[in-house]
Length: 156
Image (cartoon, one colour):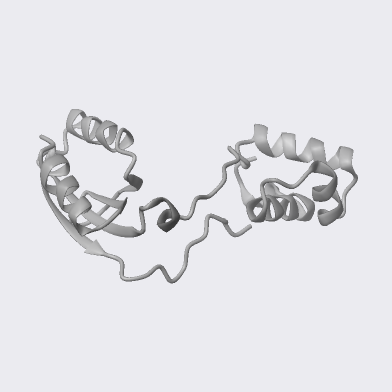
């Protein structure tokens, strides 16, 4: 089940409801989507097996845990050799302040979203950590003034 076309209306309602509230009980979910509890449970299991539904998490307010500054950082690599890319991606995976990473087309090689406490925190990360990585040739940082939209829900 890799194609959106393979999801029927009930599957779509299940996916939408669980993206809104991943803590719904099976009975509440079934009632919300108009299916029996047994049918809903089978559908959720099938959606999980197909990879449509993945892990369940709780979202954290970054400001409430002292990580209220979002920085979008473009990264240029010294080399595009597979070893350099793998080393950089392993570095990214190991850095908790990097919450999103995209390999990009165009002038820059990667776009990272980094959450930090303040400008000083980011300055240390950029100068001592990021630019010290042997695969990184340069970076360009953009500080978000505010977040005008944030969602984890994918349209179905």
